[in-house]
Amino acid sequence: MEAGRDAAAEALTWAWRNWHRVRVMENSTGYLYRVGRTSAIRALGQEAKIADTDVEVEASAWELPNYEPNLASYLAGLSEQQRVSVWMVHGLGFTHTEVAEILNCSKPTVGTHVRRGLDRLRERMGVEHG
Image (cartoon, rainbow, N blue to C red; front, side, top):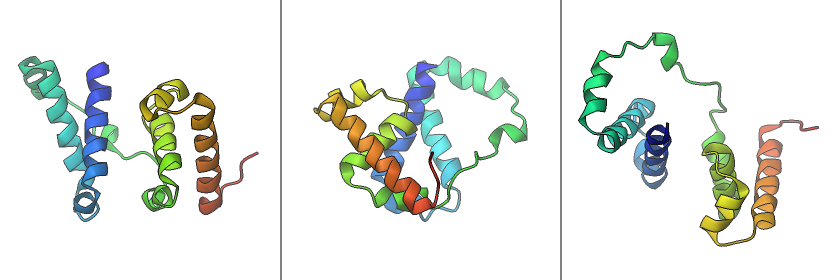
């Protein structure tokens, strides 16, 4: 499980740093899958590579989740602190305490960035939050 999280984080980090390349790729999802897969293979060793060839996956398992196609541009419209806080908490599953340690700020500050960032995203996306 940890290798999977690390692989996903590796792929997302690569995408973030190389967004100028990712955004013009014909199959960016497939490419990022390969980045994560390579990371997991390195982390788990050759056993993962061998086991991976024996696994059959139904086509429906590869369907993309329902997502907002403009999310990247909406996230780009947030302040850096809001964007990073929202992404780490809601995109990567970090706790507010973990994000505060990483960003060297207080837990309430992270909470404020997340709340304001989500409010701004909802506003730009036209989502009512009750």
